[in-house]
Length: 581
Ligand SMILES: Nc1ncnc2c1ncn2[C@@H]1O[C@H](COP(=O)(O)OP(=O)(O)OP(=O)(O)O)[C@@H](O)[C@H]1O
Image 1 (tube, helix red, strand yellow):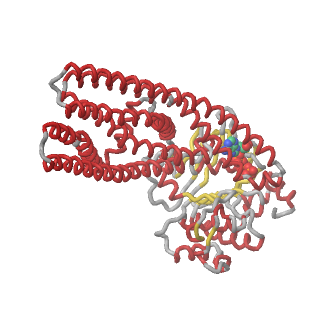
Image 2 (tube, protein in one colour; image 1 turned 60 degrees about the vertical axis):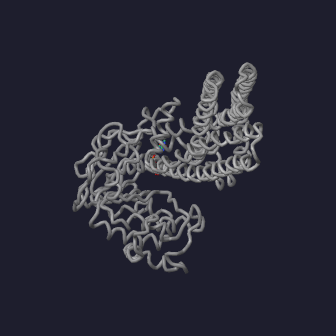
Image 3 (cartoon, rainbow, N blue to C red; image 1 turned 180 degrees about the vertical axis):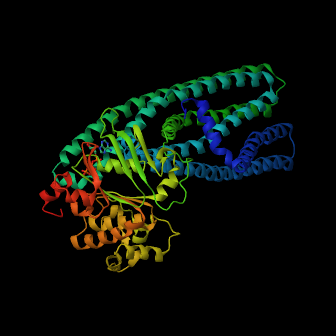
């Protein structure tokens, strides 16, 4: 999304505001009422002065003064209403944008997350949208409001004295032009600074998440030194950005000062020549010109916010632009008895020139199980990722029931597939939240039934608070094995047709693992299951077995037959491992 020009940014903001047309209409009516009162009320001061000069009675003078104060009070009320309504609109608009960006980050694939560290994404979703929030309220209240006020003041002066009005209009247009140029000037610099600052947040996030490894390896000083270097770089960029911002602000301020002194000089000359202007009218013109200073100065101070918001909007546009390959509107996989899986000559590499899966073929019939074994780094988890579209084949095709998975609707694919990864992420919440992934519509009965299916109910009953047991942030109060049990329950809760277990029981104690494995084997009967494991016993009861090496299938066959064939790689591995593995 091109959000590099002022025009495209304005359209973006207007599009976001369009669902709130009614509120925006009320807001603008209130802004117009406020401006009308602000420009009209000084007429009673003019009247007051002229009436006083003419020697009118105190009751007449009191009436003019009363009307002036009354209208001023009304203007204050309108101004408060504008602030409240503008706040409501901007928070609604920016919260929606925050949700949109968060959904986008959750849906995007590994390439996206490889490019953007979590801390950087937090900065974009919260920091950049926060700046947009400031900008939107400032945009509505200050930029639009101030421009309208300038127009109203210019029109009022024009009505009083066309020549003075014309001079003020010309000078105001020049001032506004310069101020708008200044607004664009610093955007690129601010954008560079924001990108660097987000990168630093990504760095911090990674180091704090990896704190245990850093401490265990005594690498604190290394982590701090590289953070310090990053901070120095950020400081240099901040200095450059600061000077650009200061230059643009100063230029704007100087221009403004010149314009105002020019205007006042013109007024002086013209009023001297026009003896027909009353004292009240001279006061009114003078009042309007000093009033003009307020919106012009406000625009100067908005420049910095505008520059930051402009840069933030560009970064939001870039994020919204990241390619979405989740095919949200693809073919929906219907109700099948079982799912077959096929890899046709698939090649994939995290870097396009370095394939980690090469010309890979696999044909797995529905409701059958396959065990995948092989050395670390041989590509087993990558096969799993290709299956649930966390990665996409660069050559060849992965299909489910004969349909290319790139064409399958993302939601329908993820409803059918469950993946239990090697490292489980738990979230701050209850045990229930972590099993249902915060889906409040899932009843406790279904959760307990799933625990029973997986023979985990005895384990789960140990928790004094049952499903209400609190899980700390990052699952810090749960062991790695317990986290794997929770992840298995998560996967089977949705009764998937295809299950991928990637070292899913590797951290569970032998007794619990054996019970869970037996349960999973029973559950395998009416679903297609892919089990990735290092322990050969984990895959011993699968229908098929695949041995991977350097991204290639070096052996594939029925597990039972391969186990009985002494010349097979699998039999050799079993022998080396001492029988069952
Ligand atoms: N996100 C990634 N970005 C870049 N390279 C990656 C990424 N994930 C894996 N790789 C590389 O791809 C290759 C295959 O990794 P994969 O995780 O599929 O292996 P694996 O057989 O599952 O290993 P393990 O048994 O250790 O889990 C490895 O060389 C690894 O370095």
